[in-house]
Length: 274
Image (tube, rainbow, N blue to C red):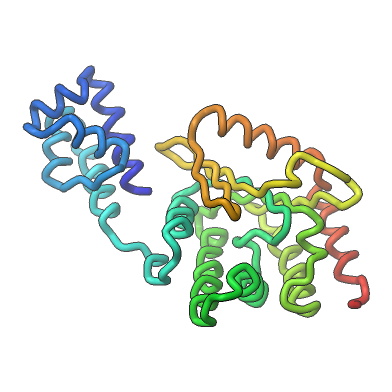
């Protein structure tokens, strides 16, 4: 993510100076492909190259220091890389860690940033039935650590819409679901967290066949994350972003208000176990 931000800033500086990729490549005595790959974050960049580009683009001392810091951070190993997560999951976590806000919709489970430890373990075990217990525990623990973003001094803004079906599905046990719903209510009261539920009584709606996240990122374009059995997709073009933003607006309009959502979850908690 830091590499993407760095590439976007370097490209903006180049364009601002009226230089083409070929112009910069000639000055650096490298191929135009290298400059393009740096700007699109397809490859890393050395501190020496960044300092050269700072001189070429005549940036201020403060801006140059920022670019050098981004370069160093882009090379640093992130905490989640210690957990052996699949590449697609690690990519998403990296984006999530850099996001300032997330709008997400889930149809069949409670979003990861709102899961309890017990629910996270049970749902991971269900999704990955053949995975060793150690792998399940690592993935679940990484998910809990990610929730620290919601409690930082400058916390992540989270707006989660979920289908009531996600709360009616018993994951793990009735006790785990009760704990999860109680925690969902507690977290929904945080000023940076909004939770809405689409009740079963709403009938068919635009989100029934898909779950997705829209991640707002500073310095680079927003990203839509869509995951399913056919694979994981990260979408960034304007048409896809517009489509998913419109879908999210429709879903939160259909959903109960945050206050009524807490009332619905309270009613589900009060229902006797079967």
